[in-house]
Image (cartoon, rainbow, N blue to C red):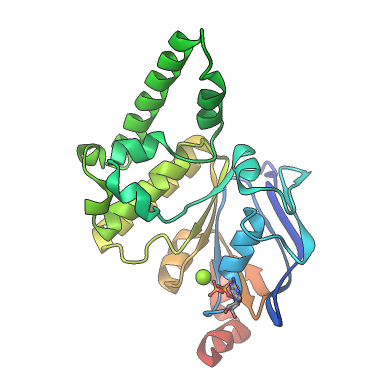
Length: 258
Ligand code: ADP
Ligand code: MG
């Protein structure tokens, strides 16, 4: 077996909010092309960990490395430009834009930036060309998620599940190498959930994308992830293949004990 790379390394990550220690020295790695699950009871520090990795919060201590480079404390758009993205809930302002417009405005990506840069006199044809590329990419991505029929619908009119698909589609517009998904199935019906999972597996297999997934449904995690990291009280309590995690008494207790 060919050893895989490790795009993401989190070492001794700490995050304090006033007197609260949300993340308390978390250390873990994520293998290239894997679908890794990050689980743990409410308040374990999963979302804060994601926020520290993606530059939303500045860590109090510790380091985050992405593809061998230290990205600790970098700005979210700089991290996204390196190919590490998370999904964001669609902001209220974007409800009044169509699905296609939302896709074309997808934040953080190199494409978006190159378009802004090229908006200078004398480069009109470049702009038009790039916009055409962007539009094509947006359509292809909408087709991939089977929401292309909603392209002209206002984002505000989408169902909860369709919104989740759009959030994922938007994040993909930045052409990431790795995606962090924080409870992407919340409020999604089983049919859409299945579709979303299929797309995630497709992206891993066809594009080699790496996924780190926070999800509270243990069965979903155990069935879909090849590696599982368990957080409890801001630390990594255990990690390993799902079969091993399922057997760990401490893990079971952390859940039942809250
Ligand atoms: P999880 O996603 O695992 O449920 P969080 O990372 O959201 O956990 O929260 C971990 C702890 O940090 C909780 O006690 C939470 O109340 C606290 N926390 C998270 N974000 C903030 C914040 N912005 N300010 C203060 N406390 C926060
Ligand atoms: Mg959370």
